[in-house]
Length: 262
Image (tube, rainbow, N blue to C red; front, side):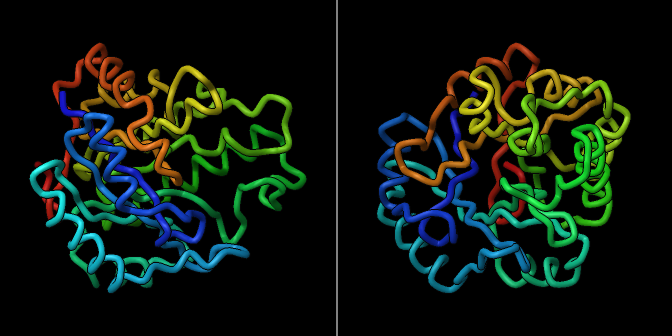
């Protein structure tokens, strides 16, 4: 199974100062086969301008592709924030450039974000907040076709004013199953986001139980990404995830070139 990092952020994202070159060097040192840059683009994200200078982004990354072409495969992607209030704008943005790969992620719901302290959780029990998150995710995967994989689909467990932030998937498994079924029907995948190891120590986003559920339902499109915002985290925990995916039954990860799955 190939070792990839398909979720990386650099100075082209508002929340990172990392050098794309340093990411590449770290990926080579980690023995990765392929990487994909996926800098942020969110529309009207509260208090943070998640814009993306696509002209400079493609110019710099294409130069780096040429420079390192004999050492590692480099792809150019984007992480788009799926937001039902900006369907037309999001679709237009993705169509305006030829990305290899697009992650669709839920970062906000109706201009309320999850990063603590966040208004999203105000006056909600943990169950109410988590249920709304999964329902919104289902609406988004039904509404959007411009992405290839759903990013960190239980991301909500990272945040919230609760002593125990973990998600009890059994409470929402009917909604989660429907999310996975829609993705499979649309020939879209999920990612294992290794940043979850920082929070839970033993897994990614989503849990491997949910990854296995995706596989049981027929899903075979899967990527691995570190969600790295600093170069030292590129490739982090990829080997552990590869071994977990093999146990579940996956034969390989998925990669993309100009939006076509390899």
